[in-house]
Image: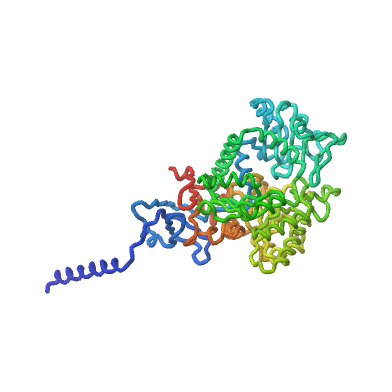
Length: 578
């Protein structure tokens, strides 16, 4: 036998062996999408990073090395070549206001204004274009962000005269950035029936000057007077017009979320009527993101309707209605947060209790009876203590229930003895990292250095108690963009370069987990989302930079390149289109 013959036979044997091996391996069903060639952060402890993912339908079917995932590429597979970009689990807005987000894109944006004069100018321009009697709406002003205190003023808030002068024929309602106060003009007060003789409602405040004249500021429940007048105007529109308006709001909110890489949104309170509108949109396939909605309505309506509305995973996991929301106090900025001791800069006030404690206690009973989660807005230390007491009593009264995951929304200012109770009771601290840096310029004046140091925005103290912290922006209180929020969570750095009690900041891993797995856990959805693992929904956010490694200063400027929801590209950023 010649050497050439030997080589030929050896080659044939090798080829036969390869064919036999291939025949013994089962064929891989092609994926509908493969994501590869970048950094993929999974938030899974067993494999924190992988090279590639395979998706079939709306689920992840494989994760691992590129060579292994390439086997899933078929003729019809959409391949997302990251080209060195970073993919993370789809970001979850852990506490926001979905319809408020949509509406904020249709009204005057006041978040960046720096003076009362600028607000007056913007309203005047809008009034010049509006029909007589048409409501002019705005959102986002915050007097603490103005470069100068307007004169004259009451508690730093301006008198409405200049605003009313530029909009005499149009009612004006401008919502505070916190959502806990509104500014109205004379026409709006006329329609709302607010005069010098009008008394402040329980849990609210009609701010007046020394002569007893309303200045235009309505705090907490007093805002309902103007909101009711606005609602009466909207009610005059036909059902078809109102439905079209609602769809525009939903579409705007979905688009705003997708542009910022948000694939799931936990909506912190909608009425049954609004839930009906959202449910119809979901059934028609108009929800491009996943919504988890807390119902916020009267106790009477909750008792009558919650059982029939409770639903998990409607419209292919695009809508879940399995929680109730209540607000027990206001915000620090408007001095509405309910405190154990008075405000340092207003010793006559301990804030506002916006819902009677007995009503919250009754609602806790309704939540327990319906087997749904309860989220209560509580910012001040008194509010948090009252809610913790209610939760603890409810848990003790229902010893057979083991997985409550009830939530305190915001949990910003806590008394030292109450911090460990979150971990002990298994209470979710649904917090917003960017609130710490937004509030920092004035919170020391409101509470004093010692109180803030001991119990203000204490993320590390809460985590050490065993508590789960879920992150979010409280949009439209803050912009929905997760990147500035993550930067604030990681650095607690202010615009002037100072750091706000930096010992409480999170690591990058902790911060991203608070926006993914923790947020999913807070909604009892961690088996579906929050990490990139086989079997979970293929919700993926692709970023222009690796936020786990780039310099901290670059995090806010990180762009969203792709937002993938259920294995389909729902948003392509400019970088993806090149």
